[in-house]
Image 1 (cartoon, rainbow, N blue to C red):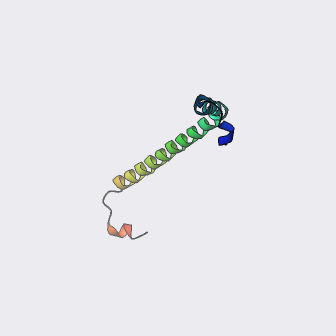
Image 2: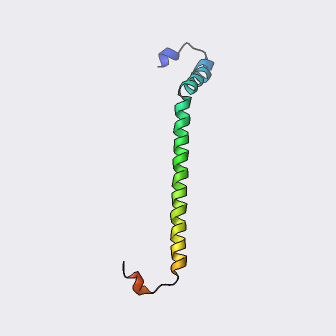
Image 3: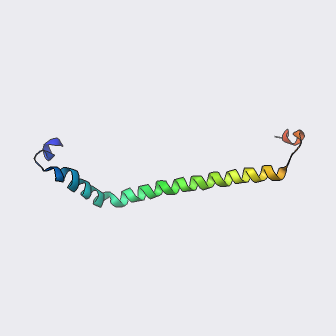
Length: 72
């Protein structure tokens, strides 16, 4: 690879080639980034809903006796 780029100016290596790569693969890169962000958002919502459910169950169950906990 170094032999191919050996005689080229610096701006071809560091500007033109990365710009071409972003133009060609930009949609795929954007889709991957949006997928990861969407997945993290869904995980956060899941954790918040499960935490809220646990909080509500413990709040409305009140102080239960130890015998009801032994059923598990």
